[in-house]
Length: 249
Image 1 (cartoon, rainbow, N blue to C red):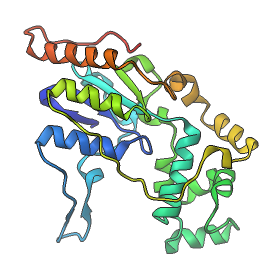
Image 2: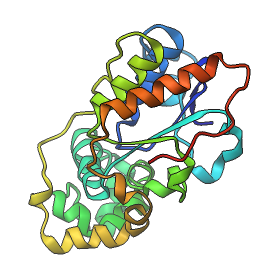
Image 3: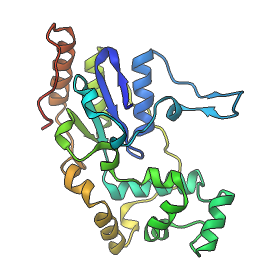
Image 4: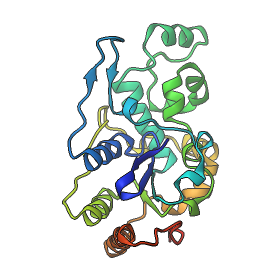
């Protein structure tokens, strides 16, 4: 299942490296009234973190019609920026390519064991084959959101944290703050990548640009956001519950 708040009929469709962890924490706090606390499972030795509580399903694994009565939200991010973020956070900060099994596989095929950003992008397909987490965090947006932009009631760009806060503050009547999570890793900017590698990524994620490109980098009018939140809040009190919102504009 995607992340839902049943009492508010809100459904958030998570995407790795697009404010995923931050949004799950925000949704949890609204749903439960408290902060999520990571716990250590004594039986298994595993940490019960936010991503165990709330999964990140592929769109092909859900029933889209199950959310027709929900106000559906997604957050998107330019694919080049997502890959840079994945390198910063998953490769450099979390060192996911450096565990024994991955390091051995990398060495066997002659790839850099600690790739810099350009090396990571150049050999992205190979690194995705070697490491499941890297594969998940760099999978296309369309893997998680499907191929219909019109399915969603609101699509935010990752830069619209204030708009997201306005939406949920207006909806709940309480001030809400989107926490900043998974920020670890060295600074890395798009201009550090050679032009040919940027073109490589743009070609590889062509479907993301085709379906969601119009949302990348946008800043939605706050009045529009507040209006949509008020309309949805009013619909929750109506005896005639909504089945579908007008497609996102």
